Image: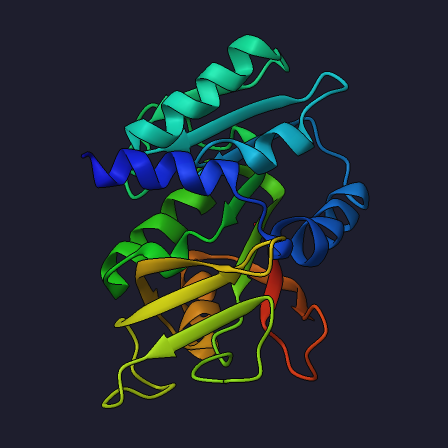
Length: 230
């Protein structure tokens, strides 16, 4: 069995509460406050968010290196056309995209899948390069401080006992709550501090505009939305 393919299909089919109840309302709110015509979804997966941002003459490009996820996205686009284009590429080297091209660069659940600090820096540099002047980078992400808590609902983040909040790049296991009350486990995630993320974005040239800390029902943040401007 191709585990990657099977997981890609399962992840696409499952309904994660954090998608439509935690992150999506804020992401739509953020986008509604900006005038934009073009958006690139870096790490688009099966195109969940790209489809929700499409329409009204928008140029939407989804980019991912996962062939299985892209196959799902393209199949959905073929069956229900929204004018979204998809492209396979490594996010740290987007040579096919010209500089200063997009109004919005979108990164959702991407940084937590990157295994080292240098690659994160490269991704941030590329996200900056392909944005127009005054364009915005919008990031949806698990809140870094949400680790090893037993009382979480929408998302659980587990680090090894020898690691702490300050262990940049350490392995993490994420468990996302589904509508049926079960959790979908992501085994190959990584942890980075909020300080590292914001400092790296600043080093790429971005200016912080908004930081929203989010939760479903918890009394502490489980997710966050960051808006940076070029």
